[in-house]
Length: 395
Image (cartoon, rainbow, N blue to C red; front, top):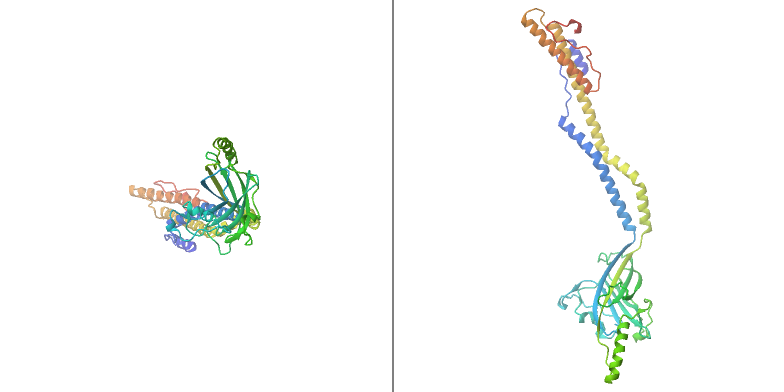
């Protein structure tokens, strides 16, 4: 293109060069997209890698979920409850809404105990997520109690309420606390003990009672809590001391009245740490800088190429604009030098002024276009704007 332009100029013909095959708007949009991508994409990649690494670490770390419930009850302070049922599930307000029967205690013939929840108008609507029956054992002197599991149903994961097709193992434990009104479950006057049940697959049903046991009093538990003070011992002792005096005066014996207590239970489900996943998370964290760099290269490659193409198009446009301006300046210089009038009339002087001005302006424009294109300026000596011919500046 430039060779043909040079040949045309030698013949004193005018030439216009055009390389605007991509519009300025498209070039600006391409450059803008590349610039924005260069800022946004690395941040998006970094955020994505952080989320992935955190998810991997969270999946590998120990996860503990605890659920708390309580029951208010009235009981004689000297006669502890014989059976406790800890249940987590969906409960309804009416027996009519219940879908299935209440899980019944194993090895117990006492209907009053077996239907304890129903008598309290507590109706479980479906198979519970968690059901634990505990037997209360009392020391010979009546001052201490211990809790022992007799039956366990672990029907679904407590965290999700679901039973996976390949049920994982979870650690299960319960903490029971007996306390009087106005005393917190972890207060100094509260009594109770923790019981670690062990690791179980969701879907486990287990009886801790032998079918050979005819009398519950003959049962020796597989595991139980340590002894803890009887929750009603102090109340019973104080009331018995007062009743002994009344009994002497009245000559009759009477049972201690029922007193209010609260039983608070905390069920804990623990997922053990996964050493493999934690190791993978550590490796992922260590490799993050390398992953970041490689992903940025992949994500930005197309944008980078687009930006490079835009730069080349810009350079081509600027070069074309310069050569057009240079050709225009050379044409106007030739017109001034060879075609301007040489007479002394007013019209002749006006013609020389106009042509010299056009040539000088074209030279200045060519110099500016050269600087824009990163090229050396072609004109160090400019045509003088005058009504006389500047022959020294003519080629």
